Image: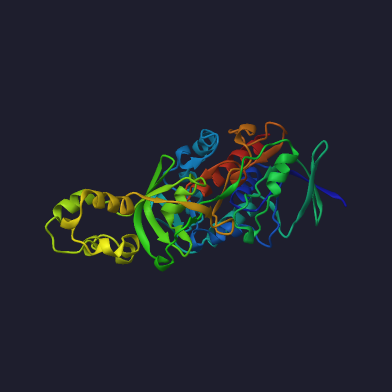
Length: 391
């Protein structure tokens, strides 16, 4: 089979891979993108409920989890959210800011994929879909053997993503290539994912949402939580899943804006039952699920200090224990990945194999919920694309 020659070959037609290819292509490099699916950007399309939370107005390395917390700083500083927003504006894609600086498409997330494809066409990037990689070899150059053709290149970019969302084609290919060239891969697990409660779940509360403050491992998030049949989901739970470890309790305050001690003092002489008082501030279904019926029927004046403390433990300091996540099918991202100690933070190039690059989710860099992982895809892709364009 005849080999086709490219200046760079990118494995993975997701956010990071497409963006990297476009940057390198505009700098004059002949680039091919290999995608095993029939279309590129499938994870982009389903993200953000079909609206794609493509970046966040306030991004720093503090919004990412990695064994090397400083690794992301350089790339994020050299390609900012505003740099990506300028491209979005140039393509006249309407977008809106939601809470916490999150930017979403007003219409469909497909507009971001279409934008990337237009950029690819302008940069003369060749996109090969339905392309399964058989193996990667390295002689004087890299040779990527596929079911369709063999591609030869001096620069190989691994942008194949992690293990989340296997239904859109996620595999462990990128990790295999990393190990092939001597790289280590930190432990991977599902993240930005719902958690399953250990022991008692609350199936009767399934679908109930509560504004809460969630704490774990010294980290705290104030957003909504959502009760599910098996445990908890919602933005605050997805955020804390980046930090949660098995057997580690998660403290949840179901009434973060309310001082219960003060409320009890104010209601000391009230004739109202405790459940009715609390239901003015919290879903009655939640109150009934968390407080024993005998206690819920009491008046505040009938509560001794031990009872008050027990109520606060249940409502303000709930020690939720989880035994598992909802798994790869439900995880938005992969925690862990190719060790950043072995990759240049300036260029994303391997420190072991010249011409080999790792970008996006394949690396041990995991962002918070809210557009941070897309910004990492753009920033790491830009870093590698510029390096390839200058080499």
